[in-house]
Image (tube, rainbow, N blue to C red; front, side, top):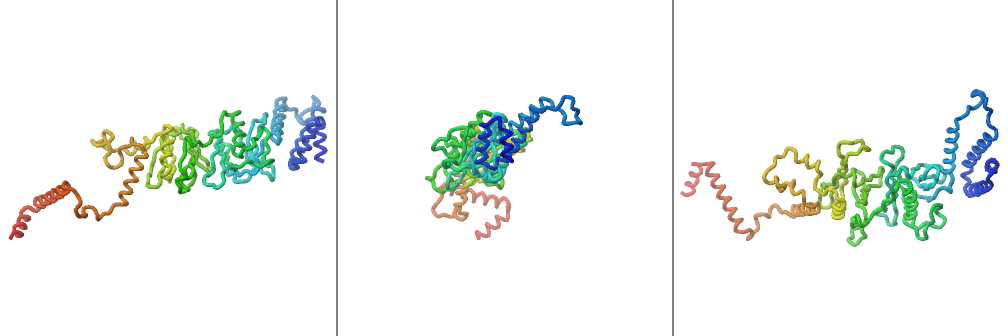
Length: 438
């Protein structure tokens, strides 16, 4: 029955009817969809050949719609038909999605000229669309390697516009291998012979992003940030473009990219553009780890238009410190030990003195904020090592050690204690001396 309806609806277009028949032969699951389209086309054809009389009253039949409403409905249907046509999509099957849903789905990248290009995640078993995102609504697209995996994998992170409250972030993973012949169905470009999933997906996304927002997929750059892998335990291991860190209780990976910082891969993903950062400071600098505290400018999108907000990433490995510090300095971010707001709070209520009036430290660690963070961290580590090697019973007890100046200081100290006893005891001390003389 469905075949008859489809054949009758598209009989004026034999070539189109033949294409639909071939498509349904290879994809029987699309038959209900084309049945609905064919029924609608028949309704339009019937309305065109049998228009209602002009004197038909509203209660005698369906009221006439304005011409503009008819045109809008037809355009909407054309858009839906275009989005339903697989020929308008580049298809990459069997990809692992993590955000907003954790499922194995098919990635469809549309190039429809009617409704604007979009990407969508489709359930292959039911052909239902789980979620979608138009390229015009994407603010940032990033592709980074999945850390600490024996086989290469790559995560694509898609962020909707900041003021978009309807769309969600999208995170999906592609393997770092070349697709097998016939696996992917690409219509918009010609895949290269040695093109991997990562390179192919990046090209497809860039093609649509450049049309709608003049943007490109962001990739890590080893010239921007590169550090030895802290997890391998070998100094000869290949450098990586990420740092393991914690944000609160969430363990993740921090990627210093040319335009900003990406932290993932648990929901929600976080991308911090460099131009939104007021300052970066180091806190809790220990022998093996340190923390990053990032102050952000007030942001209307976050609901805070007057005060700066702060993010902290904890437990970064000390072996990554030189690379992190170089990244901060390279991009002109503040590399002081404390941000201006925190320093003002710390200094509130303190009285200036001769030692710190000119920026000289007073011995409690509050001074010398103009030095490099690497030097400060190394100094604190050295002080901790000295504390660990310190023996409370060894100082002043070693035989034959010390200098003449130290001995003089000890003698002066002893004399000072004798004078103090004399001043405090007075005549009683004299009696004690007389008795000892006798």
